[in-house]
Length: 252
Length: 342
Image 1 (spheres, chains in turn brown, cyan):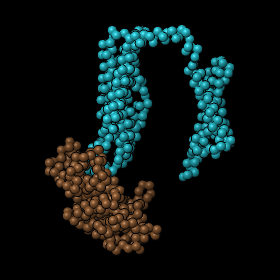
Image 2 (cartoon, chains in turn orange, green):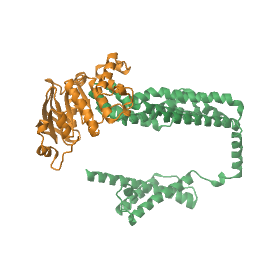
Image 3 (spheres, helix red, strand yellow):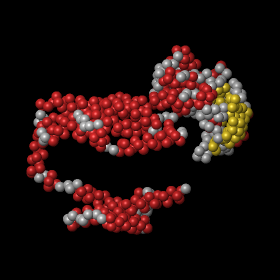
Image 4 (cartoon, chains in turn brown, blue):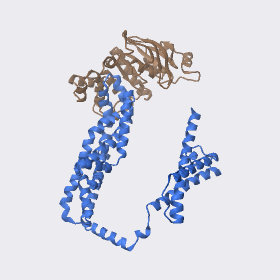
């Protein structure tokens, strides 16, 4: 599905965020990426949809090289890849359904979208997607009147408007409480199973990783230090990934 | 890197001390010595004299730096420790500067309490004040027409400026323009031109335009419009710079085009603040339009100048009262509307 070959990322300030990361994402899998803050997880995810430009290396999507595509081609590529964020990144002052509709912008001509002329079937689809994440009754409320977990579900509905083949989730539950975290993770799991959408998810909590993902990759200081089944990560591996002083925190 | 910064700070502090010394010398000689102590008129300044003042500045900076009693070093956080004698000297240099400035201000503006309270002066002022509180009502309709002209002048200046402000504010928002070299160049040019335009008072613009297009409301409107573009663009672009970048990133990730990202992620975040700034600006423009009228910008200000020139104080009184009422209403309305928009 998605293949990274020897990806390096050096920021203009000299930070060497990724030091030659190679990985292969299989269609339909739920891949988790773990590691300390600053280990390069977010950078890696943003290199996948080219929100960040890798300094060197190659990105292949279904066998096609997308490392250097530009403008129209790049937007067409991004349309196939949804993304949700730690801070949800909704436009707070707009309604929930408007936020969801904005996920369709990539498929609309500029002037039509600015005039707000979303086709009727697309509006229906937006409501349907809100229904999928269980908050269709909130459609007309302002986005910032919703709770954190609900906002993240709006963000998921927005990404569904792209009918994405891959969904990138950048620490989707890091600013949510444990109960809400599970609810959001369950929706990701459902999308993964029902629609066959490939999910690549940055996570902090190993308990969530074990429960939801099919495969896990661990990053440490910009390099992959572990790759395999989440059930294999034991205390020993945990210390290698997070350092000797770390202790695992359960999230129930 | 760290020591480089330290040296740079040291040099800046030294130059500031040279200025302080220069300032003390020039005020000490011109004001303290001649105006206050000798009470005579000093001979005109010569180049040689200025050089000697400057030399004093360097000597002053040298001594205070060498002995660590420099005020600038203290300002830059490099001074002697608190409660020490050297620190006290630095603080006292500061007081000397303040005292000298106040004395100089007093002398230069020729504050004279005798004149202020002289019987003749009070009588004339009293005549004007009594005329002001006995407004001449016969010119009411004429004045009302003029004040309406002023209101519309301010409104037109604001409306004409708006589209320019809107477009320019995006082009001069650092967070949107920093991506490319061309963007950064556009950003810099607009910022520089804007700062320059804004630093010229609307009054000066009115004089320029009244020569250009002739005395009247049009000149006043142009003057206000150009100043509005400069200041509103700055307010707008600062608002754009303070928006949450998250939604922009999110829409970029969906494959939306740059214009769509701006329309759907930036505009909703800035719309209400922009509206609020605009109303505030109209409010300011109404006040400015009055002043601008005095130099030929038309409206109530021009009328005020005419009656003042004829010393018809009862008519002036009516106009002043009407201006006060309109400004008060505008102030009140704009505050209420802006509150409602929060």
